[in-house]
Length: 515
Image (tube, rainbow, N blue to C red; front, side, top):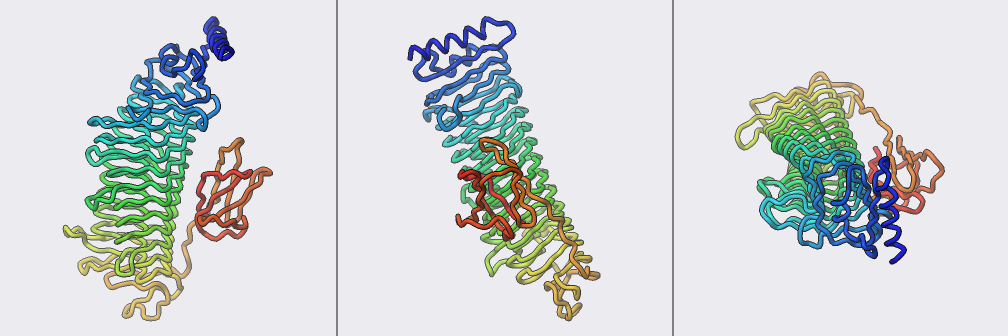
């Protein structure tokens, strides 16, 4: 203990006596300097608080000092800030910028019960710190606040990268929860390269929720096994929920195994998201297993939306009173009950533009169009898609007042789609009445196949590329590939599916969808 005390004093003295160097404050449970809050309060601009291994039961209020670097010495496995279930773990509302860093901690057991309290793990208001390489877990809100793990408010623009955000839960506030993260009040965080898993929202946004003109950038995250409550009144977004004027950019994420009544993977309402280049697979919703969209304008492009399940309708995408642009997606293998409709894309009082997509192998119609309960019509434009091998109809329209435009598509055969009167010799997918399918394409449009590049951040950087079903490593590493059941598979000729990588005997927590 004496040596630790001397070390702490020596480090502080060495750096504080120089006008050109910042101070490093060393915190350790066995030192006289054993409180993170005390050291933060003693910092000046640019100081570092280096925290040794241990459990620190604290509820930190960040000081009004720019550029403090709060770092766990040996990383999140051994350096723990525990809120002790009596309040939030870290609160930041002092306008600090990105030079303020929180890195290398487990941040756990934040607990909020008071009215409108938000952010049980980390509360970030009007501030833009860098939050990286932490495990943020087991934080709960049992009141009407939101943002169990992290909340961003008041134009906050933090960079949230390389964290594990798991097993957090949000309360209820004006239809909002946000189990893992919540963004509101014109905040614009960067949320990248995180694992967001096992979070729960009482209302909406099991993994991430954004609202109130927030514009988060959500890229290259693994968003898996998050969920919302089971109310039938409109809870949305098991993985990600967007509402109330938000405009997030959602790109390059793997979104799998999530659940919500409306939008197992992504649900949005009165918002303008851009959803591009994501793997939205294996999610479940009452309607909209992959994506649910309501009264919004959105761009849904170049995603793989496959093997999602709707308990009712819209296995892949459910559009309700909205007109998104749906282009360049693979919508395949999505499932609904045999007695229901709209396995691939469900248009319920909606008129999306659907172009350049592969819509195949869906159970219960590739695209299904109907007027909604209030009489809003569905009049989509369906052009230059590959629509084939769907159960039931390729395109079905039940509105006798509308002729759906579905010309210039490939229907699985050069003879065109089957219609008993208009094209009885067609060997492609069946089309219903009130669908204009002529002329059709005699060869597939296709979707350009792109390599999947993954940066794996374990010990050192490893680039993994899966292209046309083969696995290549950029350096000599021991690597095994597992399917979703845990079975080892050969890294060549890999069938489409969801896979995990093991590098140097360590499971890399990255889910990979191979086309």
